[in-house]
Amino acid sequence: MEIKINSLADLMAALDQKTPQNLEVQTSILCPYSIVLPIGFTIKGTHKESCMISFNNGDGIGLTADNEISNLTIQTNSNNRAVYTLSNHSDLGVLTLKDLTVSGQVQIITRAGTNKTTLIAENIDIVACDARKYSEQPQKYGVNVYQGAFTVYNFNSNPDSIIKATLTNITLGRKGAPVIGTGLFICGFGDNGGWVIADKITTGDIYSNGMLPFGQPDMITAGVFIVNGVKVESLVHHGSVTTYGVNDMVLDTWGYVKKWVAEKPITSYGPSGIGFVNFGTVDEFEAKDKIETFGSGARGFNQYDGTVKKAVFHSIVTHGNGSIGMQFSKSVGSIEVKNGVETSGSVGESLVKGVIMTLPADAISVKPGGDIQILKIAGGITTHGDNVQSYHVEGGIVRELEVEGDITANGNNSIAVAVTNNGETPLKNITALSKKGIAVQIINGKVTDRTGLIAKEINEETE
Image 1 (cartoon, rainbow, N blue to C red):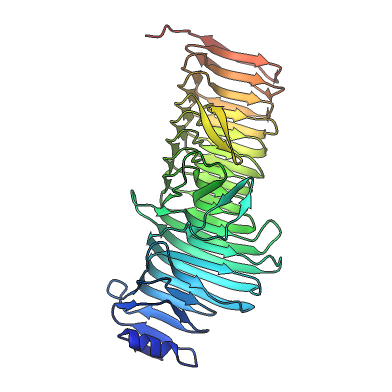
Image 2: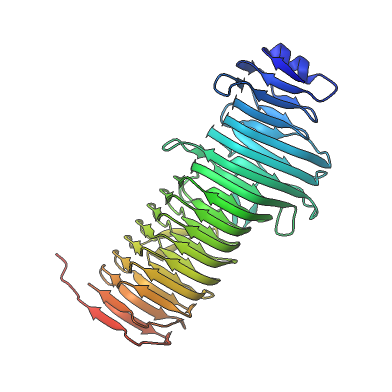
């Protein structure tokens, strides 16, 4: 049986019932204080467009266990929680969020004492949120991470504690009006539990801005952050993912993703905002549209820890100084780029593991510890800036290399192909072209196969 809710008085009377109730909101209601759904209670609107519950003095709707919120618009001030958990029961049962338009944070956090939760979220659109004020933040690799507009966080250190999650069609922010902090934030307690286990995550468009000050090295955010203690079976972005801020990654993981697909553009506008950075383990990644970054030190793809077994990219384009196209310092499997890697910048500052460093905007950079089984690039490798390397194996290893199109360095004192610091790579059937620098430079490095290598130094005069 459903209880029809036409006023704040109706709502408060219904929530005071001793047995679980199904509440059906008929109209728009302003609440001067947060409300809590007791165990087993559900609340839904008859029409999402006309049924709004708004909170003008604090947080919104607290969940306890076996609750459902659906078909509603929920509005709080953007730096408050519109939906949150308020319970330490051992088993929170199933928490369901469906067809919600939200202003404020959705924050599902479980703490000590809660060992089992199932979360189902479907068609959640967070219009505005500022998630920066919350003190529960993961820390690793010398940085802390802000929570997100949509946050799922197992804050229970018990390795047997689990949040099981299914999240479909999560949309965050608007173009030019991003949510503040991280966008989608999924986090376990640490590398050894408690866990968040997600069988399926899908998103629409995501726009976020961490609002971090320039030069701060120990705080980061992301459009989508899969943090440690998280295992995801399938993660698909049906919409674009865009970040605007400093140290504001677009896609970032410290956890495990079995299959990850981005169907639309991945774009970063801020300094040190990396398109896709992997510190975890990804079995299979595919970007079906371009990864493009515009800020200084904003790299396209980074593999700094963990591994990716197979990754396929449409294309990678960076514009800023210090903005490397792809950089590897760990072992990976097969890496393929279908439409080229291109950088425009020269030397500049970039955030690396919590430290600001000076980097050249190389297109491909394989550092010590980097070991690529197969690197296949169609569309060429191109740099435009001065004092950079288009293809630089600096202490790492590339075991199999296939490049369709030229490896070209257009800038002054730039090098098309550099193998240094005991780096190792084949250069079979490669055309290296330098317009104002060096085509091929081998310094304390090893080329395993030079068959068909063509090196051209044009050395054009600068106009």
